[in-house]
Length: 172
Image 1 (spheres, rainbow, N blue to C red):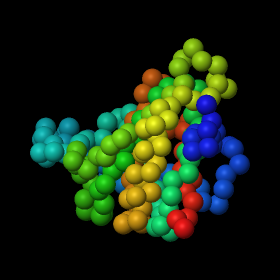
Image 2 (image 1 turned 60 degrees about the horizontal axis):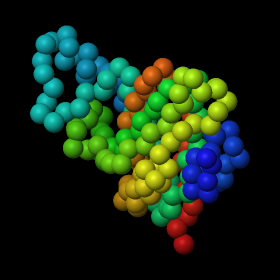
Image 3 (image 1 turned 30 degrees about the vertical axis):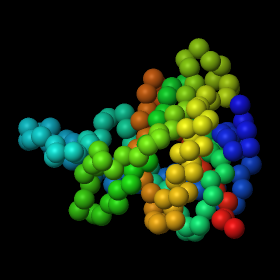
């Protein structure tokens, strides 16, 4: 299942171009407060707004270098479940925390381990989609220094049991 441009366990030997996806706690808190504020006041979301669901989180990836080629994913999930990753083309400022549906990118990435699979079994994933997703991220890195991702945790997967990095090589 592990191929040259594919998925490697998060603990595998990583190269210098590997970038960890980080959890921006302040932004995530603001997005959760937005949802609870709307619920308390009985207001509706803005037209086109995508509210963060309880099983979702936003992660951040910084690009100190912008001329990159996608190499591979490093992904680790303890236990079983499904994690989907959607790229977000939106830039956030402290006063803007509304996620807009039109800012969600395709393709999405999906990793999973079924409940009946042994815990040490390799994760399953859709190789072509993940390759295209990684290449799309490298393209977007050319015009931005930061990118955000929407992670959805399903079927018992939890953020605390997840590690995710992306490896890039410098463009020649």
